[in-house]
Image 1 (spheres, rainbow, N blue to C red):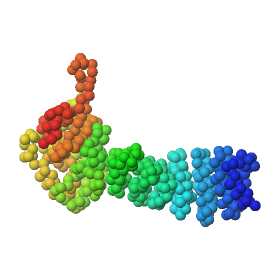
Image 2 (tube, rainbow, N blue to C red):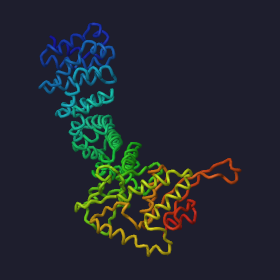
Image 3 (cartoon, rainbow, N blue to C red):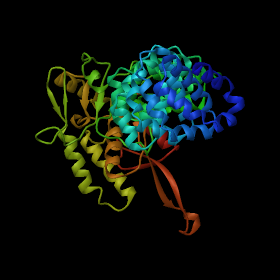
Length: 489
């Protein structure tokens, strides 16, 4: 009779909720969840799920302490009962923060994580959805979700072919991956490759949620580079080339990947804005194309020495060594200290940072960069400068394709512009870094000058290219004939 009763409740809840609520059906169902047999509990879970469509019943179930009873059923050996208990919890917590907190307080978190590995698709989808609801609660709960191993547990659902599982799992990753530790957990659990592979999905919502997850995961460079190694750049580029597939989410995901690594951004776009601040660890490996394999600086340093590949690395960190030098190590174990760059940074901060006028700072910095990289050279004499031989000798000396920029004493346009950008960023001078053809690169600075026609009352922004090669310190008006001559052969 009890089975028949709860079956009728399940069938007629949508039409007779008020009458059932007045009969205190919620109390009867809660009792059954604790005292009934598996069959009665299964029907009771279904009835709870049906009654939970109504706010009054949601609140009544919470007041009757239904959550501990349902949470206990999540460990039941009966797969069907387990699944119905999860469905009841999913309905109870949908759009209801108090019930979500009650689920957490009843100890549901640990069991939800465990259910991510179930064989029933609906169970996994519901578990991921509720973990996502927990992840958007207070920060302490978010950290508890992570500490329970939720991020590694989400890797298995990422291999599913069920759209709802994939949507809920990627949304959960979106919420958790704001924490750096969560992103590291996902990397260690080999979760980035299946996440990136979801970019091949033809399901619109799966693709949208995947792009959102990639945006969040790209907040740190190691995760972004790892996703690029699994083909995220190429796939997003292909998606964005299609008018039918492209969305704001796919465009944002691609931009997030590129922006997460300035080394990658410079390689792909050939331009760093004044707001892109170069920090230690940046490297220039030349132009980069979509479809080209993405390698880390460490991987690049292990490549056999050749004439074609040269990587200029920037690192003046004073940590991680006894004498204060960050160390690059060649494949042969040879230490490559960039002490020269450290000293140059110190000198620039002491002598140029103190100058009051930004134009003076630019000119002084340009002259210092020029001095450090072999001095001024007339354009007609560039073929005699010997910078290419100098770089080749450094690579042979180091037995590595990676050359610390501080070791370069004969630098060409590309080396000088990179050094200027790095040093300018160190002292807060705003400038860009733009790559041209034939090893050209230059810096643009925006300076404010008085408008002669306004009697000194108007100050206009003017863009200049900084001469680092021929007349060091000279500021050349951008988009002028002189600027074109400087940037090209």
